[in-house]
Image (tube, rainbow, N blue to C red):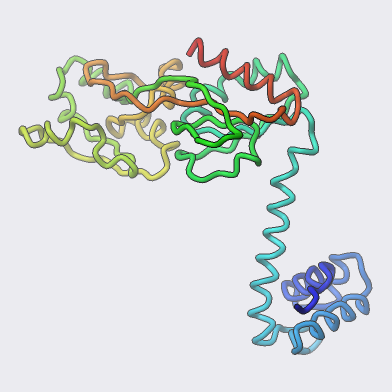
Amino acid sequence: MRRLPPLQTLLAFESAARLTSFSRAAQELSLTQSAISHQIQQLEAWAGQMLFRRVGRGVALTAAGQLFARTVEETIRLLTDGRNRIEPYCNPDSVILYCPPAFASGIVIPALDALRADHPSLELWLVTTEQAGEIDHIDVDLIVTNRLISAPDIVGEVLLEDQAIAICGRATADRIGDVPFPDVLSRAPLVMYERDPDWAPWLADLRREGLETRRAITIDDPRLLVDTVQREIGIAMLPRLWAKAALAEGRVAALAQVPAVPLPSLWLMKSTQPPRAPAVVTIYEWLRTLCASA
C-alpha cells in the first residue's frame, strides 16, 4: 500500500488550487513560497503526475489536479467536521442533547434562561431532527425521540406524551372559531406538512363523505408551520409542543372543536455507562422536571 502524503501537503495543495498562486497560498499558510512549492512537488511525486501548470504569474490545475482537488476538499471538510464534532468534549460542562425540533422549540428553548441562571457555565449542544434513524449514540449524551432505541448499552424511559392539535391565526380564529367540526375545515385552507400528506388520520374519510377542503401551502420544514399559520395563511395540524410558545404568547389560537390526534410517546434515553460529565446528570434531571410540568 502506498504511504499517504503528509496532511501539510494537502493543505498547501488546497490553498494553491483555490488561490491559483503559490505565493498567495504561502501567505495564507504563513509559509515561504519555496516551502509551498516543495510540498506540491512531494504531493505530485506521490500522485505520480503533475497537478499544476504555470499560467503567467500564477498556476492552474491540470485535469488530474481538478479531479484530485475534489477529493482533497472533501477530505479537509471531513476532518474539520470531525474536529467540530468532538469539540464539546473539551468542555466538561457541555451536554450534547439529541431531540426533535418540536421538543427543542416547545420545551428546551423556553426554559433556557432559567437553566442558564442556575448553571451559568453549562453549555448545551442541541442536535435536532424529526426521526431518530440510525444515530451514533456514542456521540451524544442524551437522546429524546419518539422511538425507543433497543441497545444493550442504552436505557430509556417515557418522558412525555403529546398530541397534534389544529391551530390558526388569531384573526382566522375570530372568524371561524365557532364553526362546528368538521365544517370548520372548509372555512379556511389547510397548511400541509410534506411528511404528513393526510393532515389528520380522519380527514380522508371526511372528504369521502363530502367535506370540501383546500390546501394553502405544503411545507417541508416543520419549523415554518407556526410562522405560516401566524400570518393567517390557514389551519395547521401539528404537535402541541411545537405550538406551545405561540399559543402562550397569543400569536396563534387552537381550534378546540377539531379532534386532537395522539402522537407517539417521547422517550428520554442515556447510556448505561457512567456519564461523561456531571452536567449530563444535571440536564437529565432538568428534562424530567420540565416534562413533568409540561
